[in-house]
Image 1 (cartoon, rainbow, N blue to C red):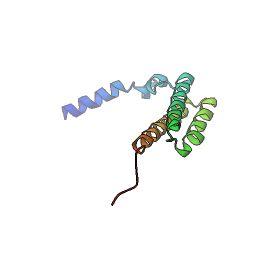
Image 2 (cartoon, helix red, strand yellow; image 1 turned 60 degrees about the vertical axis):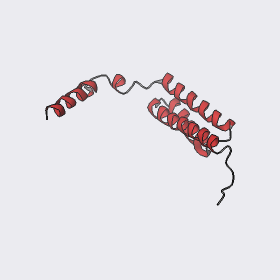
Image 3 (cartoon, helix red, strand yellow; image 1 turned 30 degrees about the vertical axis):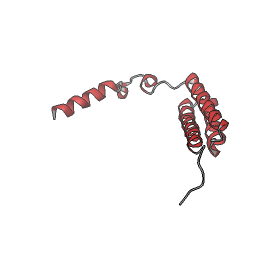
Image 4 (cartoon, rainbow, N blue to C red; image 1 turned 45 degrees about the horizontal axis):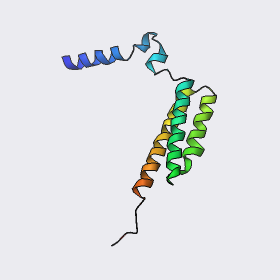
Length: 109
């Protein structure tokens, strides 16, 4: 029981006590224009790398990167970062999928 209380107190202390008027930008990571721009650039690089090996997924560039750029231009940097990170992950998975299937042949039964 004492361990549970101690863990709870540590989580509360580490969380920044935002319930009591703490600075939200430090608790949430302070998503800003530079961070969203960097996330979008990283996503575009991952998608470009996947496209070079034929592993670009259909909706990644058209849907997620486009929406991330739109959110960033509206000032919603948290949404932009979230969408860009999703696009980056899809780019990385598309690249890995293409590499895994590079030498695949027909199934032999």
